Image (cartoon, rainbow, N blue to C red; front, side, top):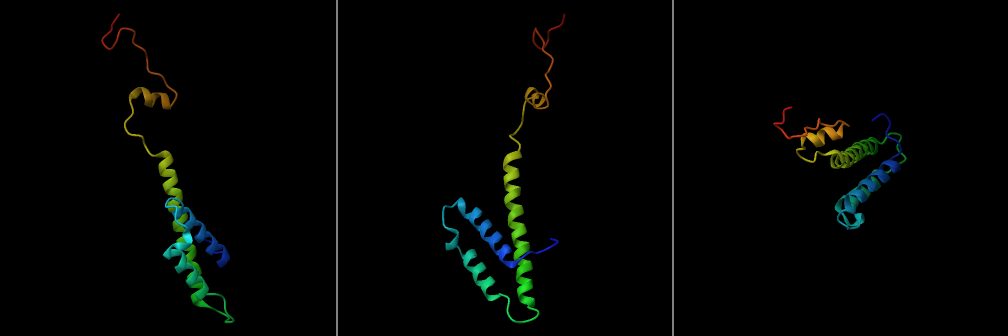
Amino acid sequence: MAALGSPARTFRGLLRELRYMNAATGRPYRDTAAYRYLVKAFRAHRVTGEKLCRAQHQLHFQAATYLCLLRSIREHVALHQEFHGKGERSVEESAGLVGLKLPHQPGGKGWEP
């Protein structure tokens, strides 16, 4: 991660990932323990009048790292579902996938002229 961006942007990204995860269950994401923890943590580590707030920077870095993990997992699952193998294919199906046709034998397998 090159740049962290703003903590508000990271927070919104985490909430978006929570919505994606809870879309399958149909439960509102605001009823989850993860949502309550995120809100509590970000409120506790707001920018204060201090010149250097190490805890706030540490929380932001951890949140950005976790956001990257959640996004990567979601994208991996989507790619896996799209490109996952469908099992064994016949030789004819495999040849058709790459645009080839197998030679046709008019009399069957043992046919010889």
